[in-house]
Image (cartoon, rainbow, N blue to C red; front, side, top):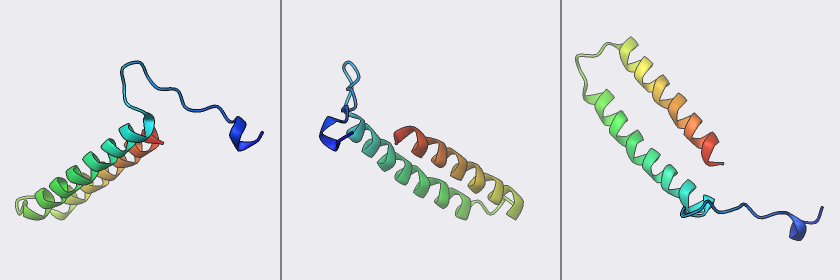
Length: 70
């Protein structure tokens, strides 16, 4: 199938195109990543294990969001 014959992604009713929605999700994830990183670095009351669990959990969330936006 030629690239010109490929079906275009459909827009959702009343929604933004997938590319715009994906960019917004990625921008939000970058901002939230900075917030999570600052929290983990500033939380002296957390042990190394708790910090690791928080960061691993955040990476899992980021991967799930990235898969949905592609």
